Image (tube, rainbow, N blue to C red; front, side, top):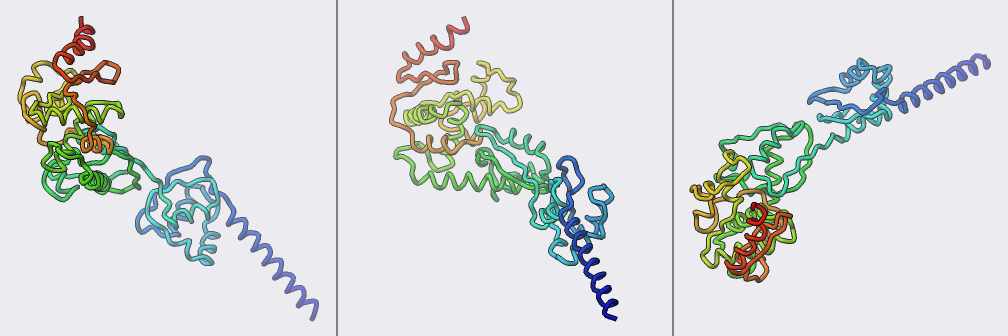
Length: 328
């Protein structure tokens, strides 16, 4: 009798040991993929459905073993919808990645100086971003009020997940721009030619488009503010180009400077009606705190920098040096 009992106990021990070894092998078994793959967990997908799909893809040998493990650890069945990158680590690790909602993160960058048309074009090609934008009521949709969205999207890189909406992304950019402007406006210099913070945003957008050199932004701001304070027209080409819109062919002509648009600062007094691009924080700070300067003119040198002048005579000489001599 004792021998029978010992035999049964030994058999149970062996069975338990084999079962434990199989369990450990299953837990540590890698997902059978050579390179990382993207896998979408759709809303409502259950654990058994996921397991069967992976088995059908030959990513794992047998589904039932993982169903047994899921009985022992029910948290494995808590699947969060989204797009995931699966790797050839263990099957369990890949499932836990889904349990934790560790989705693939995509990025969208608004570049300093981009205009709204360019941002929207980039939105159209952003991967896995749902474009739900209402182009006819865009400002209302993003900032909650009627107006023009130009200038209100802060240049930065924004991360998102598959299925996120373009409106939610742009709302984040708009909030960041509003916060940046609200924080900078109370710290502005005195005697600036602005009625409100929106005027400063318009000026910052012009500064952003006028120079690619960060170090020149303050002086560019000083020139424009000096001109406005002296009741001089801004006469800046980027506003003219913006006013031309899709009609601009890449070459600004004298005719363009003569033709009237609300943005042609060769024809209008003061600032244009809206920003012309998305300004950086540096451009906003330059617009609100320009250095003391008597400069009222500048001309491009052709290397990305500008020659600044205080008198028309100096400016004409600079134009002759950097513009006329190059075209002759």
